[in-house]
Image 1 (cartoon, rainbow, N blue to C red):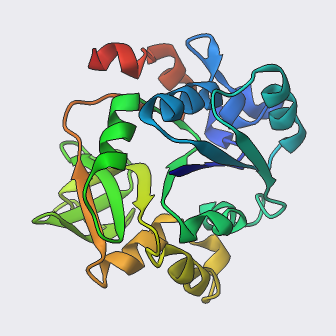
Image 2 (image 1 turned 120 degrees about the horizontal axis):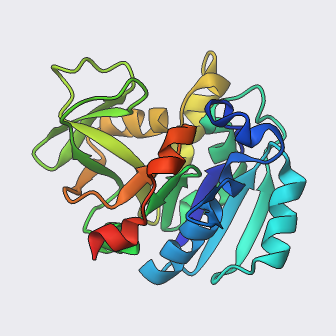
Amino acid sequence: MRAVILSAGRGSRLLPLTELMPKCLVPVGGRAILDHQLDALAAAGTDSAIVVAGYRFDQVGAHLAVHPSPIPVQLSFNPFWAVSSSIGSAWMAREAFSDPFCLLNGDTTLTSGILARAMQAEFSSVALVVEPLRDAAPDDMLVRVEGRMVVAVSKALTPDLATHRSLGVVLGAKGSGYGAVLERVIAGENGIQAYHHDVVAALAAQGLVTAIEETGGGWVEIDRPEDITRWTSPEGAEA
């Protein structure tokens, strides 16, 4: 299985830390977010990764040159990072979506256990890793799960309809159809402003998205400076 890490954005909510470096290189626990991710993906059994970068792209390449990844990494440039939403970065990695893939946001550290369980889960098309919703944060990607299936995904989903939040990890089986739906969504009106989760939402409307539920924590989204201050290793928490 190949991983795709969407790391093109600047991370304006992490300013001033991202004034001079991309968000994926912000250090947490003494190491870049990207390094934590690549280590977890390798431990989970991923055999390679595409890292899609945009803002200060050259720094990501320089970082990878001196911090060797435990798995082979293909660095892809998203030249539209400043004018498109996350779907633009997914589009730059579209070659990966015809084969089994694991797609994740570039600002989240997760345990290798979460990733391994997701990769080993049974699903026929696409799967989304979620956790039960308790208190929704303003920027959560909200999810409604019925049975084992995802039926709705949106930041605008009302709390009374939402049952879970997304961890930002999307899995696809070989021939999942994710790539074709990605093309349809990005080609639509204002498509470049869509989130990559909008592709999942479109697939969910067809009954094609399985929910993989995690209930034990083990993931930390690095969105604001206080997230770094509070950060503790997800791996340590799971152990």
